Amino acid sequence: MKCPECGTENPDDGAYCLKCGNWLSRPSAIVEPYGPPVAKSNKNAILLTVIVTVAIVVMVALIAFVQSIPRSADLTMTNWEHTSSSSAGGVIFLVDVLNRGGSVGTATIFCAVTYENGETFSENQRISLAPGASERFIVTVVISLSHTLDSSGVFDCRLITPIW
Image (cartoon, rainbow, N blue to C red; front, side):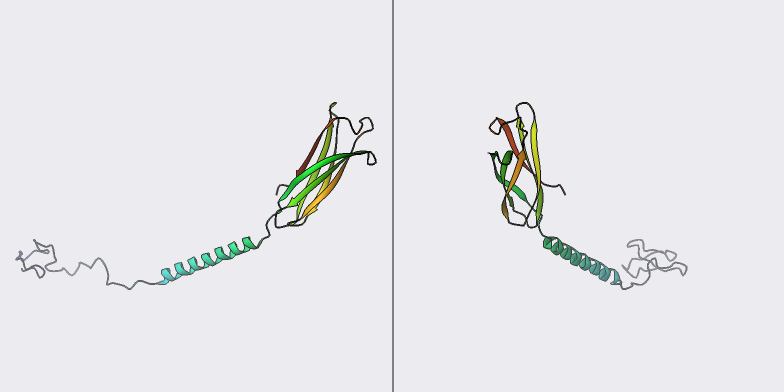
C-alpha cells in the first residue's frame, strides 16, 4: 500500500506509514481525538473587559473622593512666653498657635510652673482654631500664696493635640 502523504510503499496490512507515520487506512472504530474546530466564544474576553473597566472607574472615583476630603488640622505652637501678674495671682502664659491644616483643629494648651521644692501648678485650656488661622491664647496658672511671683520656677508650655 502506498502512503498518500509521502508516497512510500508500505505493507498491505499496515495501519501507519513506516516513513512518516501517517494513517494508511483508518479503521472505522477509531475516532478522531479532536472534534472539528469550534469558534471560540468571546464571552470571557468581554466579561474581563467589563470587570477591568468597572475596577478602573471605581479606583478613579475613590481617588477623587479621598482628595476632596478636607485635610486634617495641623496645629503648631509657634511661640510662648510668660509673665507674672499679681492681680491674677499667678503666671500668665501668652501662647501663639497656628493651624497649617485644611480643617478646624482642636487641642489643649498645657502650661505649668514647677518650683524647686517640686510643687507644680498647672492649667489646661482647650482651644479650637480655624484652618489657616493664627491666634494668641492667654492661659493663667494660679500659684499658691506660699510662692512669690518672683521666686524661681521652671516654666513649661505644651500643645497637646488629639491622636486620631
